[in-house]
Image 1: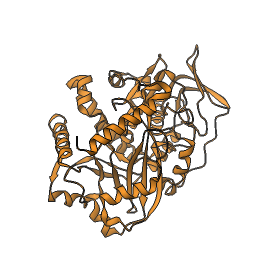
Image 2: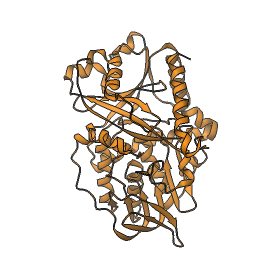
Image 3: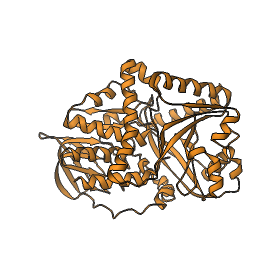
Image 4: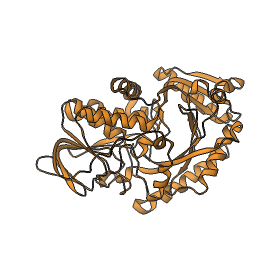
Length: 439
């Protein structure tokens, strides 16, 4: 889940509402000198923390290396939406895994959401957890597509769904924009950075050695296992779990070049309003559920515990921050909720998530001792926790559940290292244009 951050993006993260609403613990010391562990984990986001926690609870000695601060990437600044299912959709999984394999994958996604609640309860993580999710559509065509998707999930996977059309929609979300909505109670939202820091505390309590500001520069196989080098030291281990974004060298070091081309960084951005009056906040979204539309360039939003609207959208496929971003985000927010036209914005931040070509998660091995977790494609809040559990199972017990995801086929983004980003940007511009025209 942890994205790479460009230098131009650093300022955006300093304006994060999440960072402003937590008190971080003291910095964990960078790695210096040589260390020995059973497993070395690269990446201090949800996936790495989850893997480290699970491995330590199974009695393994774990060293975790984070290039920046724990949760500084997507794990600490995402939309906070914990969603059942997969970004690629279940039809893609059925096509590749078959009906039985897809049902197993669906059950695992349900486990991923339950795992969040189990860890919150077990480790006392105060992260403002709320259940309830609202999928919305802003045209008749998109309403038909949403209904077909929800009907498929209900019929094949028993997802409890309530469907709303017309005037009923305004009872769930007070916006003139949407013509249909589907509500399900399993997904929901949380404060992502508080959850990440809670996982870090749990991992340390279990014995994991955390090292911040320790970017992994090189990974090599040795006669005894693996060695991961940082600027000022190295870790020898039996196994490595690479759970950071491997796309950009600044924060996701290219320690696994063979899988480099299978993911792409996509920027996404969030604004926070000033706190809303309680009466107004309660009328915006019924039960304060998380909300997401089904557009190609989607809007996603929710209410925070202190009644701010956290509104996300406006993607970048070029790794460059879009111009006039604050004004654009404010306009998108007001298009959904015109009644908030006079409400000010207090925070604006963003970052990069890693997507795959087919939006399915990409888990696997390089050789016998190096595991990787990438390609969560926007569904990482829940799925990363599951990924950490599955990789820990694969290292310590058995790999059947992890190996299910190895059956998914992934292709490199076309264009090579220089052209794949502009080609993706061009392709997505074409898709957005068709979507705007209703095709």
